[in-house]
Structure formats: structure tokens, C-alpha cells
Image (cartoon, rainbow, N blue to C red; front, side, top):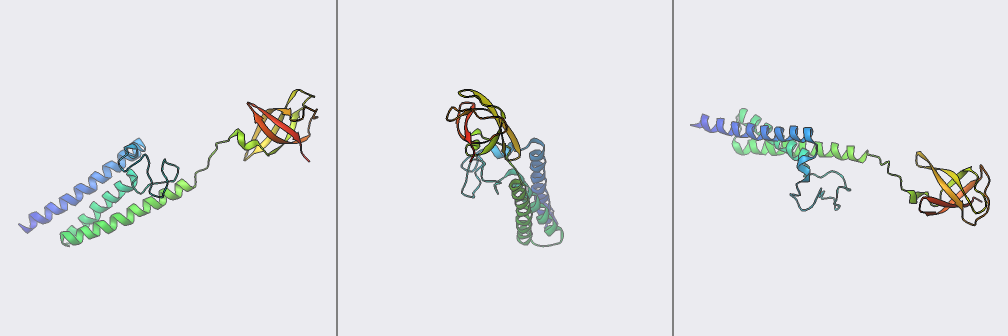
Length: 187
């Protein structure tokens, strides 16, 4: 009878590990399939005080939870196999799940923090200096080139005061009107 209970607990822990591993494989194969279920009070709620996916990785991410479940089942099965009681094996599983789930959470947080944005907003040009690459005639339009981050942006330009600005003059972007920037000679 004792062998049946030990085998059943071993089988239960292995089943838990197998389910966690299956969810992990599905999550890796299909991306964030399970993270869009709104199960915990908001899309991508992340319990860092921020929501909407801008704050980083959630400890309730499908990958973190599936690693926790897999480690819980695996360490619980190891405990039963080594002859520990169900309670001690559950404690081992819980400790193993917390350690491995925590490691995955820390690794995912590190990866998230290494992301860079290539999002350039035209409004970021205001206040920047640039160079006239097509002369701006009196009352007309020309073109300026400005560095924004690692990118070079070229925009159609008008003189803010309507005066002529010759080629290769350094200018400051004062405002943006539609697709045109208003510039003034830099001082």
C-alpha cells in the first residue's frame, strides 16, 4: 500500500512537471500566446506599479509560471524518489520552483532592459541644430539635415523670419508646421 502512495505522488509530481514543460514549449513556439489572456486584472499587468506592457516583464508571465511549475514538479518528484515525505517533497518542489522561476524572471527582466527604441518623433527635432543642405531663398523653402540620435534626418525647411539662409549655414529648428520645419540661424 505504501508503494502505491509513493508511486502515485511520484506520478503526480512528474505529471505537474510534464504539464509545465508542455506549456513552456508551447509558449516558446507561439510567442506570448498565454500572456494576452487578461487573467490578472489587465493586459500585461506587471505588478511593478505600471501596466500596459511598458513596465517590463511580469512575474505572472507564462514563461515564468511554466518554469516554476516544471521545477516544482521535477523537484517534488526528486524528493519522492529520494524517499522524502509528500510534505517535504512539496517543500522541495516549492523551493526549486521559486529559484528557477525567479532566475527566469531576472533573466527576462535583464533582456527587457537591454531593448532599445528606434522610434524617432519629429517633435524631437525642435531645439536641435542642423545644417542647410539646400539653400532657403527669401520667402521660399529649402532643406536641412539634422542628427537625431544615431539617425540623420532631412526635412523641408523655411526660414522663421522669411529671410534667405545660404547653403551650409548652421540653423536651429524653432518649430514644426506639418512636414516643414521652421529654422533660424544658429548663434
